[in-house]
Length: 107
Image (cartoon, rainbow, N blue to C red):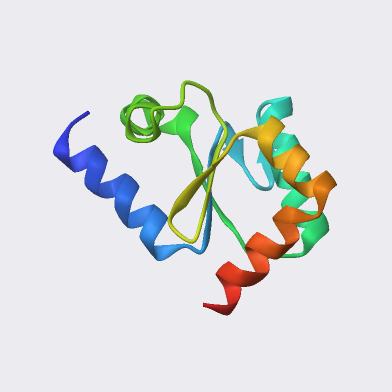
């Protein structure tokens, strides 16, 4: 990953309480896993930003290296990597995701 790509990724994560690196965007997800994440965050009614990895191959590869996580989407809350679609679904079903986003948005 280039230093520029790493800086862009870090800037996105730092400047957004909830950041999702995904295929497509929150208005038009381009895969089912990305759509799952968007739907969960919409149900929670929390503000979040997205980065379309399909539009930027450097970010698409770089985010996988950055997190040491091989798949997209990737969700960051309060600067911390949370996981992908399956992990978000699990956290949501346990009620833990709601707490995580409330803490993030309150800080």
